[in-house]
Image (cartoon, rainbow, N blue to C red; front, top):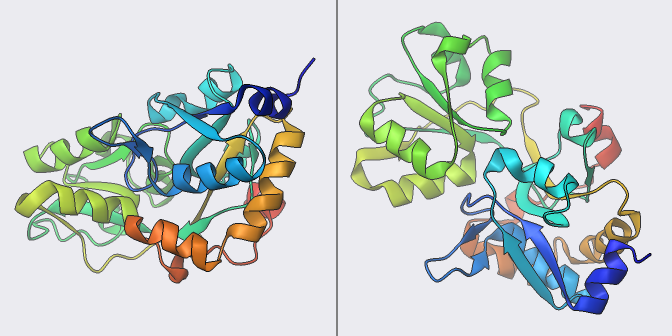
Length: 258
């Protein structure tokens, strides 16, 4: 029986799951799969003998279930490595590190600059994306369950801030910057913003645990690529710079929560 790597090489393509979260992974208006994670994936898969990457779009919360159900073979969505996710999937080496940010209405009327600011005001509502890490960060900061509004995607988060359904939405700093630019004058990125200690996230690709040969081949080429001029030139249009390079981190330690 063929392994996933052998099958992908023989058929000439591999399916990747993404969740339309710009600038990490999203489909353009003409249906092209792009973003930091897919563009790197295209380079790495080409180098290991898989010339085509095909996108499959579930909601964010459906990425890990879809991977393990065989709907696609890799998650290429800028997913943070967390201990809970490590129980379900195997992560590649990370491609970046990022802090957090809030999207708020123009002028930041509730003066929200941290998760703690939300926790201090029980009338404030915070939007988070279903299946993403921010709900956990919110609870860790003491934000009450009735303050947390779970939303399916970036579009609904942006709409919720504009309409006042929520007072802020939490995502990674680059996602919030992209949403602020797309959202027009009604919204802005809260500045300054204090990322909680220990909450810097490391984004990576997720594989099924049994696909060890695929992960090993991918990691071998990824290690050579991250931090090169070619890599930085590729991701710069999506907002990445040398400041977001992951540095020397150990995936096993990140999976332990260290």
